[in-house]
Length: 139
Image (cartoon, rainbow, N blue to C red; front, side, top):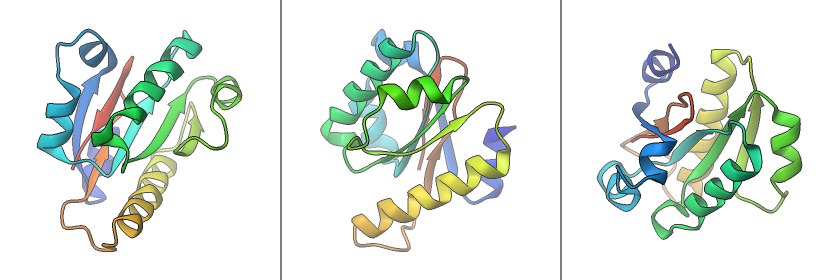
């Protein structure tokens, strides 16, 4: 449902499960190089502190430093308490969420990434789809 909503909004969506990246089943650097995302939607699930550490690991990767991150969580207050204001997170959205809320957040995050890159009209719009225990990357 979210994938369809983002795709109908003009985004190319690539979904990845967190464990696939954490366990090395998918190479993060290769995935990012292949798809060149401007936005990553990351679903922070329990255990929150462990998944926030994994988020920080992803954000520290050179290939993802230009990306904007939109976080979703069933406990947005807990995630907000773990994410500092100086971290490169565009928005934290609690569940249940409205699909239009996610689309709006991704559109705004994409605009910020494009402006930072000096290209307001990026030809390959990129956005990811959150999945249970997963995050998405896209282009």
